[in-house]
Image (spheres, rainbow over the protein chains, first blue to last red):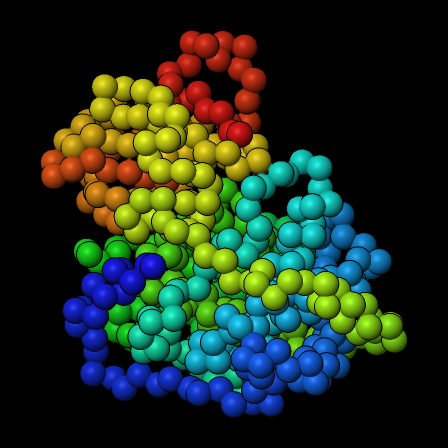
Length: 214
Length: 220
Ligand SMILES: [Zn+2]
């Protein structure tokens, strides 16, 4: 459907660097593929046993206004139902099961909060913000720069003050401004710690340098 | 397609990936990401980091009957309810914009802002920003103007220019409160932009009717 834009991209010069596409084959990713391809209930049960407790911790970490611990298992339930429904669209070449399930959880958490708040009647679900490119997008364009193991290792190497802020943003769901208020740090300091952390993990590529890396 | 030159800054991408941006700003970022492979890749990497953070923050015991409840729920779901896609409202419009438009370009309620600019407000159900489509006719000049708040713009079709540069499909711009600009439509065709205008602090100005149309915004 959106093929045209990707076609035009093929004519653009690409650099000579080899593009790595990692075929993901960790246990959870294979199970999620099985759920998507053959509606495998046993695989789904195994995924549930592994992810449900992680998702509950993620739910409990939320510091969003209007969130309370009683919602945690509702979120786990909603996420796992979505996982069952959406597994057919999971593409292991783009992301691992862990990354994909995190994105489902983040979207569900925001939607639950919006449904609870009386002020926002967004005619959108958070999923609408996350449209993936088409199936026929060349995998080279979807290059994943780093392996999951490396990301995990580099997280452990982060200084405590950088790790703390990343967790507040991603797990507690706070904006940089909210983190700055809470920690009594200037906004600029919060932003530069986030930037340093992600640069150290080689996740961030400033727009002006991105071309060199493609 | 010309190459995208203007992207959201990295802090905006991070807040987008964490889901903490105001919805109207997130709509603009999502629209840009639809056109931009670079930002999409960056977001994939950020999601990867976030998922590892989730994994490393430990697990919490769940109720014994939770799996049963999930199974009961999925047994009730008809098999054909997943993977619906949204067809673009126009050309290569992002799905999120197409969904907000609920129709094509002609079916929007366009209001004349000046001889060369029309605006159609999109219903987003939040009141911090007015989200709208702007149509600048070929070669159309807009009056020099500023706004009472931040203004995000994403070019959806065609191109326009201002004092500083030319902006084309997919480009993402942020004008800060009070920055004046004078966009001009490209000569070779009309330009359609998505914009999110931050509501000024004083929303209910008693002299609102005197305000220039550029300052009069109406988030719906
Ligand atoms: Zn971009």
